[in-house]
Image 1 (cartoon, rainbow, N blue to C red):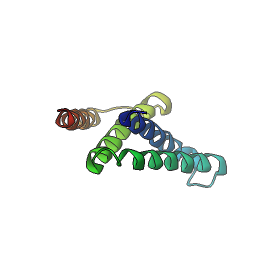
Image 2: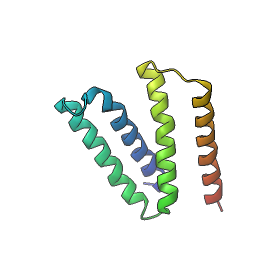
Image 3: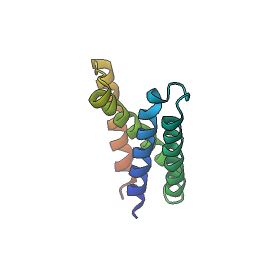
Image 4: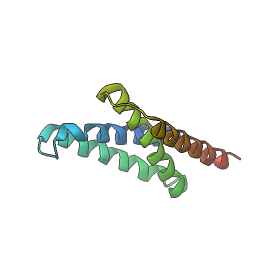
Length: 107
């Protein structure tokens, strides 16, 4: 499987785990808590595989920044959260940073 596909799957598992946080009620509800831990475990496992091929800094920058953007979208779509102008600006800056990193990586 191509390395960027593994990274994207890792990011999706991280977003799923983060999105489960409210339902764990402080890790007091067993099933959502177990699901959260499993999601993060799979995410980190895949990320360790990706760092065998790509530079760790690039991997973590992509993983964290895309995770932030996707988690924000999950909050808007599924949790009824709203985006204000500062949040939109921050997301735009994050995405521009991701694009810049990706362009740097392209020969």
